[in-house]
Image 1: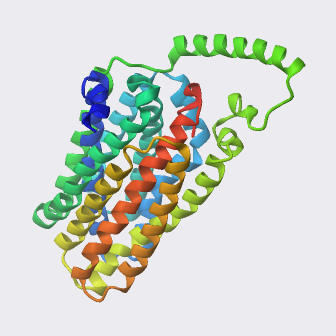
Image 2: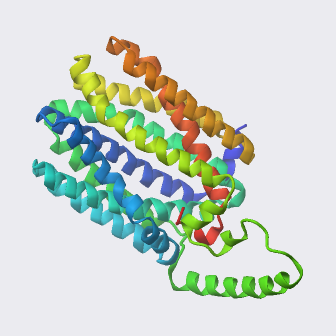
Image 3: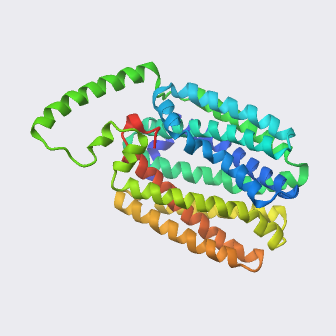
Amino acid sequence: MLNIYRPLARNRDFLISLAGRCASRFGDEVAVVALTLRLQAAGGRPYLIALLLAAGLVPSIAAAGTVGRVADSVDSRRVLVTAAVAQACCCVPLIFVHQVAVMIVLVAVLGTGAAFSQATWQALIPRAVGEENIGTATAVQQATFTVATILAPAVGGILTAAFGTGVPLALDAITFGAMAVAAVAIRTRRGGARAAQRAEAAQGAEAAQGAEAAQSTPAQPGAQRDTAGGWAALRSDPLLAPLVAGLTAFVLLGMMTNVVQVFLVRETLHASAAWFGGLEAITMAGLACGVLACGRITTDAARAWAVAAGAAIMSLAMLAFGLAPVVLLLVPFAVLVGAGNGMVNVCAATLVMTRTQERMRGRP
């Protein structure tokens, strides 16, 4: 079983990128807990927390086309370092600012940087590990990020209770610096002038071959994926189109549960901030189980079924989550929510990567 991980264990660029991104993920989760508790303690209503969380996610949706084109055409090191430095700079004023409107604007800037960073890493890692290792690399990344996020919510709750929200946000700024160092240290690069020249040459060769083939072969369904934009490529794929549509709705519903969870734990069930952070950590432990369970899946059909099963597990567990009369009963349901989430994350990400052309992997 361990043989499938050996190529990654010897891959310098993969390990460096994993360490930098893992540190940044840890800092992000600590900061989310701190900001959520800050708003809740200040008497903020659920819609304010919803706006804060949405501010971090909307840029990746609203600017998806621009983000994807930049990730596929601009030098990856430049994009990653710029995004990390910009995000670190945004964390500093968040330490001192308590006005909700200003916090939302700063979180939106953080989300914009995250959108560019995530798209670039998403396209860069497959090149670093090789096509044959994409599925395993995705599982390892998800599992490693889970180790960080298991600790992060509890640490965020404890640090906020002990020192206020400034220390967790300062920690987040430091971890963005770690991600910038990782981006500089890795040798694998993507995008830039050389990549544009290679893409033009490849497109010219494809066009010549396509012209010859068109004279003797009728057009095939989905052939437009070779030249279409990111969203068009997804829509033309018979598996990815319904998958992405369903997961988009699922993510939006998940955002709603994230908003009300702090009020369920802190106000309805009268639990402490440490309990809130601890439940987040337990959820991440379940996520690790789901990721490891799906790490060895090798076929698209099996991955698609795993996504459906994970979504069903999450849905049923969240229903039970909302009906629990005491906070202690939330523990097993948090594990199931995390396990389903892990199954969905690793299998959906692998499907998108393996069914998308290399030169367009920053766009989905």
